[in-house]
Length: 287
Ligand SMILES: C[S@@+](CC[C@H](N)C(=O)[O-])C[C@H]1O[C@@H](n2cnc3c(N)ncnc32)[C@H](O)[C@@H]1O
Image (cartoon, rainbow, N blue to C red; front, side, top):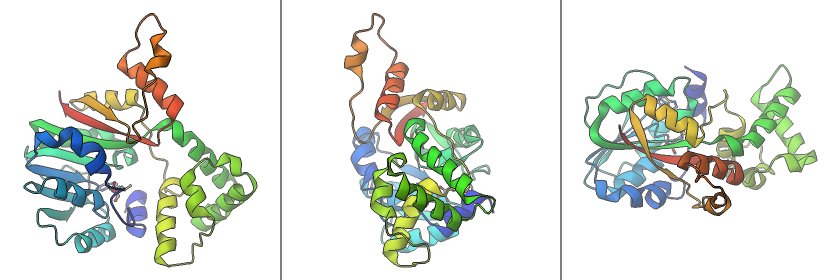
C-alpha cells in the first residue's frame, strides 16, 4: 500500500459532511446548464461531495471511486439511499477501466498527491467526451507556506523517531509557546484539547481535519494558477475558470494603475500572494 493510501485507510476523509455543500454552492451554479448525464467523482473519500453532486443532477448516473477501502465502506453505508450514485475501488495511478463515456469528472482535493498528475489528467481526457468538463480543487502554495514551516519544526523536534505521536507533541509545543507561527483558524479551533488516544467521535473528527494538514505521510504538491494551467494544457485541457469559494475580489484596482494591463494569469498571481487561499477550484474543458 502506498503511504497516502495507508493514511486515508486509517483516516477516511472527510470524517463527516460534504465541505458545507461546496459543490452545490460554488461549482453547480457555474455548470448547471451543461447537464451532464454520466459523471465520475475521482478520489471521492467518504462520498459527501459525490452525494452532493448526485442531488444536484438527479437524472445523471454518478460513479465515485477511491482506493481507500475504509472510506468506500463509509461512503456506501452513508449514501445508500441515493439511487443514482455508486462506488467502486479504483486506483487512479493505474489506467482507468473506462471508454470515452463521461460528461463530467469531479476531482476534489486529490491531484496534489500525485508525482505524475499529468498521467491522471490524460486518463481523464481519454474517458471524457469532447464536449465534457472537469472540476478540480487543488492546494495553492502561498497559504501553505506557514503550514510547511510548522511541519518543518515538527520534523526537527520529533527527531529521528518522526512518529505521529512525537509530531503531535512537537505541534502542541509549537502551538503553546509560539502561537504566532500557526496562523490557521482550524488549528486554533481543533487543536487545544486534542488527544490522540481519545477515540470519541468528536476527537476523531478534529484529528482527521488536522492530520490532513499537518500529518500527511508525504509532502503534497502545490499549484498556483500558472503552474496548474500549464499542467492542464500538457494533458489536453484548457482552463475555463478559476473559482475562489470565498469570492474575494481580484486586485483589479491595484493593477489598473499599470500602463500595460496585466494578463489574467498575472492578476491571479497577485491575488494568490495577497489573499493566500488554501486552495482554488478549476473548471476545465477539452482543448
Ligand atoms: C483529501 S481526500 C478528498 C476526498 C473527497 N474528494 C472530498 O473532497 O471530500 C483525498 C482522497 O483521494 C484519495 N486518493 C488519493 N490518491 C488516490 C489514488 N491513487 N487512487 C484513488 N484514490 C486516491 C484518497 O484515498 C482520499 O480519499
